[in-house]
Length: 80
Image 1 (cartoon, rainbow, N blue to C red):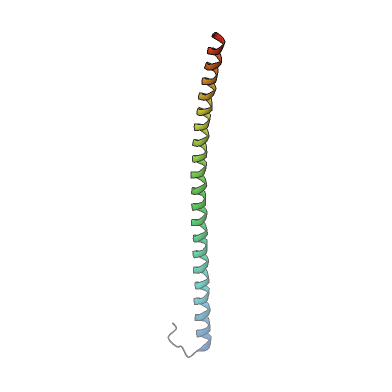
Image 2 (image 1 turned 90 degrees about the vertical axis):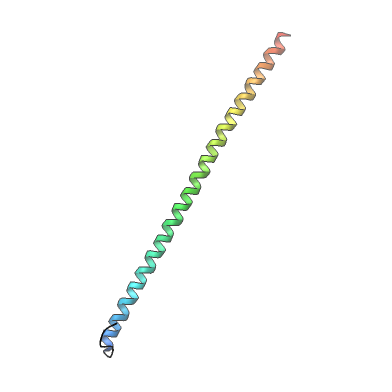
């Protein structure tokens, strides 16, 4: 706070400066929050993608195994 508070010009300048600093601080907080939210969403999407890839690989192996069993059954039926 200025030493001579009686001067209204100084007081207004001081208040404007503090108001401007407050706005900058709030903008930085909002920006930081947006950045953290975006990072969190990216991590969630990355985990979901990894889970889906793992699930697709497991399904592929299962389907391959089923096809192999079916081919073996068909071959055995042909021998009889």
